[in-house]
Image 1 (spheres, helix red, strand yellow):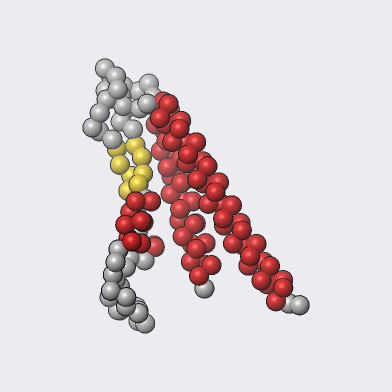
Image 2: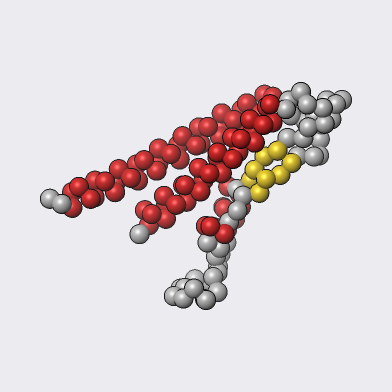
Length: 133
């Protein structure tokens, strides 16, 4: 059923958003640490690239069949350290304002995704309760 795939996808996105929140918080905690390089995570672009690939449509009826598209569980986020620039003489490259904006954007995105999961569960609950009548 499609609704379960959506919930699984959004669950994975929430995990990535939580990890990004941890990384951004760590960046903010190390804003005054000499030589610290900011870290971040990329997942949305990797997911988008895999979903937008134009593949030959093939039906997989056996686990041994070759898949034309990666499964969601096979698409992994990548944590990276931004080494290319420094903002200060102590080689630290954390911009507090940028990190705060990214933290707020990440929090809003997390909240939107969790609201969508709740809506999907409400749809399921309604289908179950109305199916009894």
